[in-house]
Length: 470
Image (cartoon, rainbow, N blue to C red; front, top):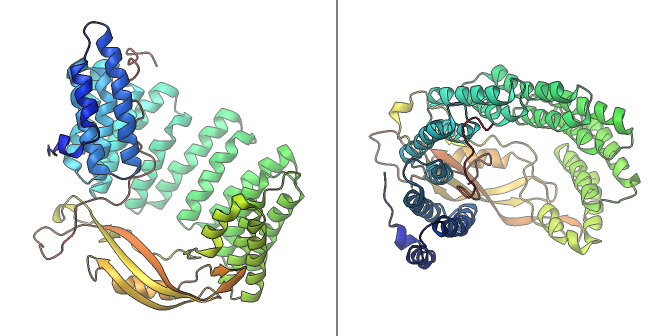
């Protein structure tokens, strides 16, 4: 395993580590003292991780693990949390061999201490699957995910709500392999699980329908997207009435599906209904109203109806200007947005498909292309220039071509759309270097860590439950 200069990287933490070692009490006080110190160090780890200081967080995670080994031994259940954090920090740096080693060690420790069906296995099994997916080895990700699903079913049943994160990863795996129907199945099963738990018309299944609708929107299955939001809308109306403010999200989701199908009038009808509900509600949510007005303006911009779009944007501007607490939102949404109104289809990985993963370095490298453009008041793009790219030339022409054909939300000053020059648009992607090709340069670092996997806040702070406790 790669060894960083741990203490060189931890100048701020080094005195605290030394104090913990020098002040180690004997007898029963030692573990209590260590738990307090571990909690403090782990908070630092979490802060560095969130700030994307991955090298520093990995070094600190390794130091925490070594200290935990001193306190509990090399095979104790209390090592599971520190191992997960170290594995996660290694994975987001592209150190996949190290990450797999730590995940596998975590699994072995959990099996020996908590049993082969312990729910504590799910986190490291997910981590292994994500690592394999990042390595471009989808086939290797199948077994850890299948086992995670078996563990969930054995603990909480075949219709368990807890299977969602595993199903989500299985969806990504199926999507990566081009099996859209199987990917959809893993998403639909989660709705069925909610229906079995609560009933098909219970308000508590609405979030699962929203999640399904977002999946269909992301994968451009527009009719299914609308069906999911419409199902949620029917449940809310039946339970709370036609004027329920909870309908707004469902109406917005349906409207966006009509936009994708170029059915402007139908989209406007659903946006307008959602806006009417918000305006008639006793508690006025100005930000939510402004967002809907911006949605309507974006729709008119896409359909070359600039005068009408300008009216919608101006009304949203006035609403956000009336509340000092909304000025930051006004700046983000209207003054300085760099918001394409349709998916640009820029590649997130190069090559797009690793049909022969063994031909490429297993660690992805971080790539980016930075474009400078002019946004016209009607949302059109002009004067596109590539000002920076790494690696040079990999997707420069493609990015410039797609951006030049896009429509963006116009930027506004004093309530009016203006021509904005020198706007910067940055696109990040990951790329894999072909083995034996030394011509391309780049740092072997990943793109972004997935939201599903976060560091454990206080690993080892509580005694591990005995086997069978679940």
